[in-house]
Length: 505
Image 1 (tube, one colour):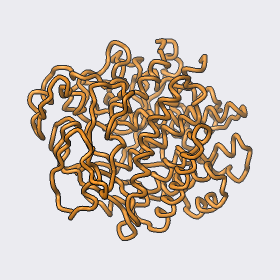
Image 2: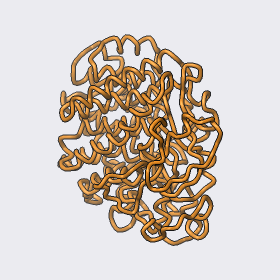
Image 3: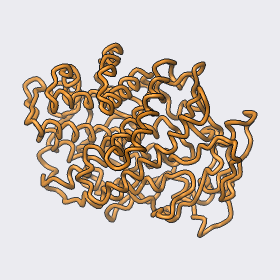
């Protein structure tokens, strides 16, 4: 992820072809995309938990924060093992198919889920409540991380190097639950900036339904962002092997400071955040958007004030946003984006669908802004309208749901043909109800990891890493770069699914 190769684009009949090649139930896909988050929950599960093969896990998370720092095993017994004076870091989400809580991608997941809920909540129908619950599961955990100890921001639980040597259910994991934090002497402006963005965005989601909670989120967002700005540095440098190579901050931290400030500006209307952004010189216009690189998302978030609010102070952000779109559109003279023959945006070999869903989320949201003012712009000689962007976005969503050369849905549980051997510990191992005994660290490899059998538990709603550049998906559990799901893939597609469910396009 530290480098990318730009390739020439072979184009392009797919924009005119594909919209008629299948009718998809976006409402069903939307429900499933949010349901995935219940399969990724850490902590004590609530009575209304719908993915029933999951159980309580990580109930002593945080207990090592006040200890000697020595690595020791924590055994989960089904009830909280935290004494009253211990730090409580229970809750939150496992990011993908492992049993680690990485706050950097978790916060991005939360920001994107919050943004999509803000933009499309009125179109979500009964899923709005489920989206709020998914957001709150993360923000409750972030509030603990921000307030557990003075001058410390906790940013993760679980030793990733130990965890990745094991194949066991989260319900009976026995790997060390190391606790990681950033501080004034070991800063992490990237992870702190992203957590501030998540808290600020979520505060807007809850403003109309729980004002007390909304104010609490916003107050903590301001505090965490101040920490990010005052103590500057990358969390990758501070945490070393606990962050890398898993979730290194390859783009450094300027983009997270920009992203966090942009969300605080939207949440507070405090113009000082605009002044701060202007001091950053954050003018990068990449042709991707992800948990690591936030520039494109920040540009589009700020461009809203120019397009919808008609405020010319934000015109430069609008220009950056439109430059980004010009790099994505396949028939733009400025495109730098590769597409597969089947029409899928193809950015990087590992977990490519994370880029597809994140970029598609930006496309539908900017199309929504454009439509509200009948705004158009040009990529060279190409006139770009809201419809231009919408057609491309819909093509990506439909590809994921089954309009692709494999005729496969890349969302687990959606349609009849979907991945059966996803790279996910809890899904691939028998549940506690079926096998009450613990497997131990390496007890799940044989026969469950290496078997060609389908996973016993269906992780409904999970979107996997996706096909390769040739539109081929092998459906092999051991091929994690294609078969592993992740929360941030799902968080980004929630908005596009709601958008297309409610439109008649």
